[in-house]
Image: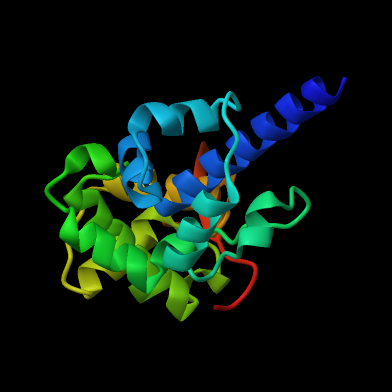
Length: 192
């Protein structure tokens, strides 16, 4: 019975590490580099087939200072979704920017994500509900031109990691009425 409980705990830690990896914007290869172990070892940990050790947790918490070793192992504590914005991670991204297998997002997508996070989200732009068209205009006002599909993709990613929220609402027509088509609106609940 003890072995079964260990396996379940290791699997839950693996799921928690997958969430951390996602918040950091890393693929397994990049996460393995961060943890200073092989990709195969990392896959085994993420699947719950190998234990995630205190040594690896220390390496992770030393590099990502906003997460402690105890938070990694405490299944009841919430991992902050903005841990990928740490100073160490910014240096890691810069040092390995040409190593595309490390990162979920390409350079261009990271550029757009950084723009949305730093110039809009962290400045509380989303305290009011915003459409993709409004976000696109705000990006254009900042001197960046991006197509709506890319902006939508980045916004949905921010929804997925819990930084903003989204819901479908009827489109507002130019005359002021509501149309039949539904569009996403995005907002944040707390100020940064």
